[in-house]
Length: 330
Ligand code: FAQ
Image (cartoon, rainbow, N blue to C red; front, side):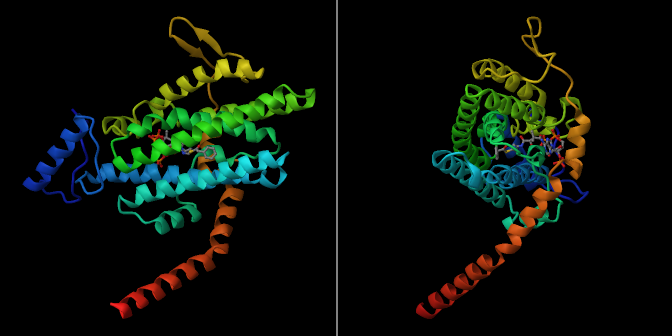
């Protein structure tokens, strides 16, 4: 059975027989692990949760372009530059699929963008950290895209159809991103002593923030239980974080780099890695807007939005002209 649901309508009166039947049909689909599509009836709370998660996810992709875009003009070779440009373009594409998925739930992209630039919307904590060296491009690919894949592969089976389908393509592209990051780090790690140090330094700085991407610990995650009951999330934040660490350990060995946790050790009893406590104070500071780059990221996004105003105006003017031309022709 699915978990208790919020009332289908905002009114305090009993749900109508139609609403009860619609709720029962929704429950049947969720219980059978089926898909909810945009035209299906859904509880208001389910819709709200999806808008919350998908808009957060879309904004993450869009803001997530900034730390890497910072290196496009300084990539060490033409090949690296074109790969990085393609990666950042993929991220823009992911943002657009996700905004489109959210639009099927009744929220417009303009409204989501307004929330973002007004500082009222969330995006992933990870994108509030700086990228001072080229090795950061490797660490973002290996750790950030790696964490994104660990988190997002299960989302391909999310109960909301447009979200799950968008995730399939996104995950394929993230896999390529992760490998290119791994390859950058491998090359640096096997390069000169200074390059090896640069790679290790980037991993030292990105490791803990990448673990924070999975969200707060399970006992402090207010949304997980309901999202799992609705088959939006399939695993808890801690389960995915643990799985990610298990993936990283052998890869770090191949890279010849060290994960910066002295307490990281395999535990035969739990069948998982023991690790140090995450600094949740840092996580909450970043979420509260006080991370190293929060202000810069939002300011840059705001500026880009303002700079793009003429493109939106031109597109609206063109659409209006087309509509008039079609009317005259009809
Ligand atoms: N940062 O109750 P929970 C990428 C918020 S895409 C900021 O556990 P939930 C691609 C959470 O929203 C990365 N906020 O929440 C790329 C909630 O706040 P609210 C983004 C966070 O939703 C790679 C509150 O804390 N990925 O990397 C974070 O069940 C390279 C309580 O948390 C996604 O969005 C955080 N780290 O679980 C791009 C994946 N963690 O809304 C460029 C989809 C938690 O109640 C370069 N999202 N919060 O005010 C999810 O899977 C989930 O939303 C979680 C959070 C797991 C992020």
